[in-house]
Length: 146
Ligand SMILES: [Zn+2]
Image (cartoon, rainbow, N blue to C red; front, top):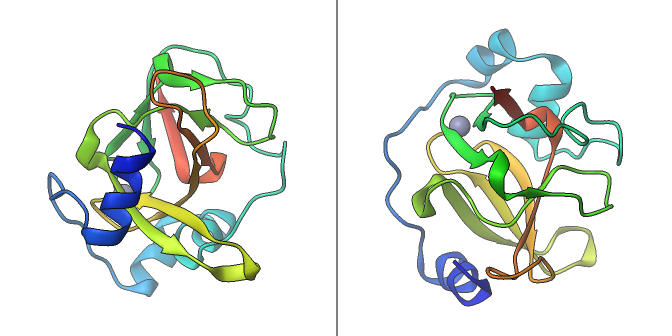
């Protein structure tokens, strides 16, 4: 994965997900905390540095808080200094869905869970090698399974 792959997915369409989970807004409200709902289903952002997983270093897999799909591995988590959990690549190429996001006067690429469309955060082309990518993800959208 590199930035060209990200742009290609955001422009031409995403890889096929390993499955699909679709629920009504009411079902998501029942399942999630208000903050999880605001971030994952309404494209919210947690305050920088507020997330519990920001400084997590335990080995394990990071799963979608909405559907449980494995999204990231702790091996590829790095300290970006941004105040949000940051990863260089997803656990599998088809775990993540990419979409161009022009909200707030910025041109960014939004990242979502490819199974349930949960909003995770954004990906930027300023991460460490070899991918050069920085997946900047809300702590509230993830569960760390150690
Ligand atoms: Zn999901």
